[in-house]
Image 1 (cartoon, helix red, strand yellow):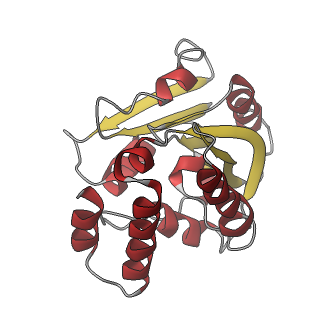
Image 2 (tube, one colour; image 1 turned 60 degrees about the horizontal axis):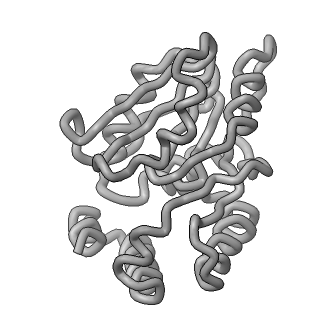
Length: 206
């Protein structure tokens, strides 16, 4: 079975519905939705979703991303293998806007962050074999996907599957592409400096 966990954080984050509409009654797919009424931080929602799941393959699906049918079918086949191997990673990232700077961000995320550093952000839609989960994510407000990647890459390098995860560019277009990019850089710097995640989250929400 493939378990799809969606940490829903707003009613407007509906991109994921494009992915799941074709698999809601599929015998080999389990849908798990965890919203902010149950847990405020995304890390907590992902932890809850994992412990409610039963599948041999887990997909943490970003609410503002959508995947093609072929991507889900590939993971279903992986989950059905009699001798499942350790596998984890994400899908090729692309924004729903053709702005050249957004294309550059996606290129960096695909080729550098995932390909060289082994860090997979949630908007790539992170998948992994159930046996790779050894401990719950630390309860922090941001960068829970980085913490998960650091845990998994100790076991194996991530793979970037050639199916496209199309992510909403809403936040970039609303706040301004350069401004949002600068904010993201400052947040990563704050994470490396181990600033309180609650403080970083307050900056992210402004």
